[in-house]
Amino acid sequence: MTESNSPDIHMLEFFRSICSLGSESLLQWESESIPEKTFRLLQRFFTVQRAVFFLREDDEMTIAPIHFFGICSDDLADDLPLYLRAIHKLDSSNSVDLITPGSHRRHPKLFPLIRGNYVEGALLVFMEHRELTDDENNQISLLCRYLVSIFYSCRTMKKLRGHLIDSRRIGERQALLYELSQALVSTHKLDIRLHAILTAVTLEEGLGFNRTILYLVNDDKNALFGKMAIGSETKEEAERIWAAMERDNQLPQDKIRRIVTDDLMPVDPLHQRLLAHRIPLDDSGVFARCVREQQAFRIRSEVERSMLSEEDKYILASDELVCVPIISGAESLGIIIADYGFSKTEITAEKIQFLWMVANILAATIDSTRKFESLVKLNNELRSTREALIRAEKMSAMSDLTSQLAHEIRNPLVAIGGFARQLARKDTAHPEDRQKLEIIYSETRRIEKILDNSLKFTGFNYPQPEVFEINTVVKATLNVLRLLFHEKKMTVEFENRPGKIFIEIDPDHFKQVLHNLFMNSLQAQEEGGWVYVRTSASDGFADIEIRDAGIGVNQRNLDRLFEPYFTTKSGGSGLGLYLVRKMVELNHGAISAIRNADGSLSFKLKFKQKES
Figure 1 (cartoon, rainbow, N blue to C red):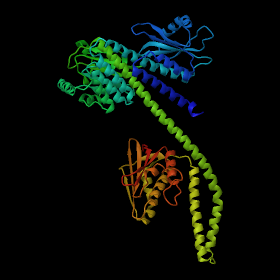
Figure 2: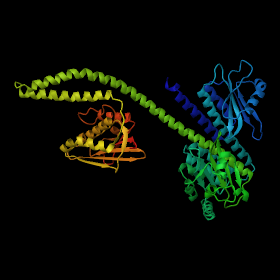
Figure 3: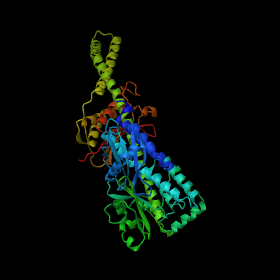
C-alpha cells in the first residue's frame, strides 16, 4: 500500500478537511456554504453522489430539507414523508439504513444530527453500487457530530448579529466578535482560546458580566474541575479594575488581540482559587445537575438559591447567576457560569440566550482544539513510524551484507593471523621480519574484533527479562573494570539513591550496555580522568546517568552518535553505541546523549521501574 493510499493517511486527510471546514465557517460565522462543502468532502472521501441535508429551522419545531445534491426536487418530494418519519424515529447517534422504492436509489443511509438530547436534523446519503464500510460509517458519524456544532455556532452568531443591529454599540460588538473569531483561528492553544472567549463575555461591549467561570468535565467523567475564571472576588477589587480600564482607554478588540499575541493567562485570585476546585458529578447542587441534565439554570430567588450546594457556593456566592452547559454532540464538556455580582444588573432571557451561543462557541472550540491535538499526535506517530520503517529497512539490508562479509572474511583472516604468529615465533626469523609479522598479527586481531562486533550487530538474542536491582549490577560492572580504571589513574564516583531500585529487563543486555558505556568513557580520556555514575528513580522510572571528563563531541556529531559505523575515535568500530541503543530499545528503555556546558558528554538511561 502506498503512503497516499494508506488508511491512516486517508483518515488524517479527512480529519484535516473537517477541521478546515469548521475553521472557515467559524471564521465567517456563516452556515449557508457548509452543506455544499460537506458534500464535496463526501464525494472526495466516500464517493457519495447524492445527499440531502435536513435541519430544524431557526424558530420552528419542524425539521425540513435545507439543501440537496444529485437528486431532483420531484424525487425528493415523492419520498419526503418517508424520510421525515424516519428522522422523527431517530433516538440515538446511530445511522439507519432506509428502504426506498426505485432502482436508481441504492443503499440510502440516514445519519442523525444530534445536539444534547435532541435530534436537530439528519444527513441522508445515497451510495451507488456499494454499501458504506464500518470505518466509513464511523467517519461520517463523526462528521455529523462536528457539523451540528458548526451549524449552531454559526446560526447563533448570526442571531447575535441580528439582535445587535438596533444597538448603539453595534460597531464595537462587531469589532469584538471579529477579533474573537480571529483569535480562535490564529492559535491552537486551548487555554488562550478560552481566555479570549471568556474575556469577550465580561467586556462591556460583549455581555458585560462581572464574573465568568468555566468548569470542564475531567477525563474520568466523574467530576468538574475548575479551568478558568475572569473577574474579581470583591467589589473593591472590581472597582479598581474598572477604573484602570477607564484610564487605559484601550479598545476591546485590542484586549482580545493582546491575549493571543502575548499568550496571556488570567492572574486574578479568583482564577487561582478556581484551579484547585473540584465538584463531583454526583453532587446534588445546580452545577453538577447542569452537566447531567444538559439544561441551563438561572438562580435569583431565595428558593432557587437553596438549590446551590456547598460546592457550588465555594467559588461564586452570588444573589443572581446563570449556569449553561457546554455540549458537543451528546456529550457534556463542562459549564459556563456568569453573574453581575457587583453591578447588580438583571440577567435577562436575551442574555441567557447569548450565553447559550457562547457555550456553543466554547463547545466547538474545545472540540476542534482536541481534534487538532489528536491530529498532531497522529501525524507525529505516522512520521515516527515511517522513519522507523525506513531505518529498519536500511538496517536489515546492512545486516545481511555485514553478516555475509564478516563470515567470508573471517576464515582467511584467522589463517593469515595464525601463520604470521607462527613465523614470528621461529628462532630463525630476522628481527626486522619478526617486527613486521607481529604488526600483521596485531592488525588481523583488530580486524577480527571488528568482525565480532559486526556479527553481534546482525544477530541479537531476544531479551529474557528478569527482575533485578540495578545498583548491584552497576557496582559489579565497575568492579570488573576496576583494573582498567586503575591503570589510567581514573577516579570513579558512584552516587545512588538510598534504598533499592528494581527493573525488569534482560540482565545480560543491561550488563553489556553498562560495559560498553564504561569502555567508551575509558577510551575517551587520557590518564587522570574521572567517571561519574548516578542512579535514581522518579515517576515510576529508574534513571542511570554516566558522565566523564572526556572532550565530548560537537552538536552535529551528537545527532549521529548512535548510528552504526559512526565513530570519532581512531581505530573504533563505530558499533559500540549503536549496540547500546539497540539493546536498550529491545528492553523498552530509552537512552539519550547530552552535551554538557563544559563540552563533556552524559549518557542517560531510563527504564520502567518494577516493584520489588
